[in-house]
Length: 205
Image: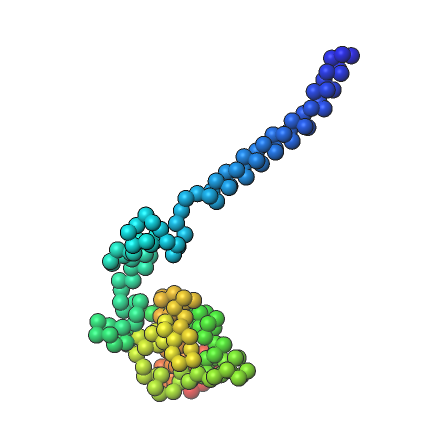
């Protein structure tokens, strides 16, 4: 019976011992976290006495480029040639997949103002926002592709830039889709592939 009493006493101590261990671990964790908060470091724009110029942040070395931002293909990233003028050619072959990607991005970012047909009758225009020009006017049908890329990148007039929201490859894809929209409004029967024309006309001529 004495052994049973000792076993019972030990059993009573086990839950308490568990809690002591939990509290000890919690205290150790809090202490580590506080050490991390108090670590020596320079906060941006905070002065420092370590450097002679009194600044904690060091100027970038000339020619420094952030990882992934080399942007060494001027045609692809600016839409302009060596002479600084907009390019008319695309910097890569345009495929059906690229045009479809452009349609997707256009419908997300451009249709609120420009409308799904590119006629400038987007939803927010119907609610009073300034109407952009239609893509189907002669001036915009004849501008170089690089011009449209530049406007998407930098904005124009009341249109803000979309360089942050839309990656360069997607901007080019949107330009390709805009060209497809423009062609859709001015295409002649001769521009339609024979098989597709037959499907559209039901075989009648």
